[in-house]
Structure formats: C-alpha cells, structure tokens
Length: 111
Length: 111
Image (cartoon, rainbow over all chains, first blue to last red; front, side, top):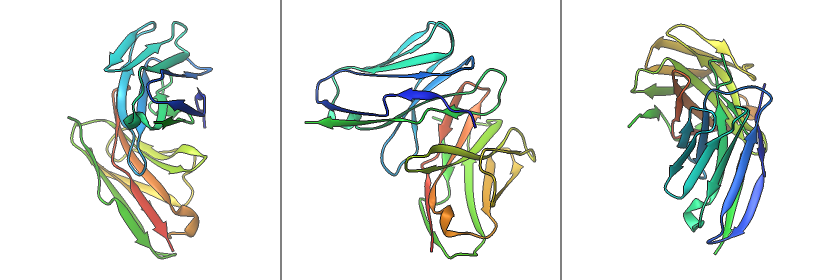
C-alpha cells in the first residue's frame, strides 16, 4: 500500500539540540498528522495540520503543512530526554477514507 | 478527550485458537482501523470500516476478519491464530479525515 517517505529514519542527538524531520508524498494531502509513539504504547497525536502553508506549534514542537500539499515538517526545539521515541507522519490522501503512514523517525537522545 | 480503548494490553494464545481483539471509541467517529506493527515494517493496515456493517480490506487482510455491528465498536478476529501473527495490534478511529486517535495497543503472542 501507499506509504509516505519519512526522513531521517533515525537520529542520535545530544540533549538540548533541535530536531527536524520531514515527510513527502507523491499525492496531495488535505490533512497532515504527526504522532509520537513510546515503547509498548499506541501513537499519540501531537499536531494536526489542515491548510497548505499552515504552521502550528504545540509547546516545543512546530509542524508545517507544505505549500505543495505533498510534504510536511516537524521540528522539536531544545530536546529533552522524554522526547525519545518514534515519530510518525500520517494523513488521508485526498479523497481517501484511510490513513497512510511514514516509516517513522526513531529519536535517541544522549544526556 | 477522545478515547479509543482496546480490550487487552497483552494476550498469549495458542496456535489454532480463534482470537478476538476488541476496540471501542467514544466520539462517534465514522472510520475505524486495525493495524499491526512489526519492527522494521512500520504500521500495516489490516482492515478498516467507514460505517456500521461496512468493511474494507487493507494491505494485509489474510488470516483476519472484522466485525462492526455498532458504530463505536470494531473487532478484529484471527480465525486460526498462527505464530506469524505475533505482533502489536493497534486500533484507530478517524473523524471526517481530520484527526485520528489510537488505542493503547495489544501485544499478541501466539505460541
């Protein structure tokens, strides 16, 4: 099935650093969703984006809906140990009733 | 807050058993989904439903069936469990293509 291209697949950073990850698609999306998943838990919705060009923040997290509607970005500023986990992008392609997901970005933080 | 609740966090079943995984959401969402998640393979869609008694196959429906008799409940059925169905199972509900929420996950082990 269709998947989003999410990069990077993994990141190893120092506490306090900023983090950037992105997702791209060959299809147009009307909604972009960003999730975080802790080990053994279900993904938790962090940010939802609904308009091309939209920039939305949730604490130290900022996400943007790309102008072309085929990409999205997530930034985490001043990372802390509890940011460790897997981050997923997702969305329903235009006209579809189901979600497609990126492969995930595994974030590891060295204290 | 939206709640998606999966009936079990951990299950251990024997090969050949019929297994039921239950998912309930409390926000009157039309669309519900079942995914399995395996290391290195990301989230793979098994089945989804966009209305009561309606179901659609996802990317990996073989060995599974589903039931949606009431809007709030979506059940995943493993007709005859096999060891290759050992996995993390995630249920999600989607509101009008805008936001999707996940349950806490069920880790199923088939022995």
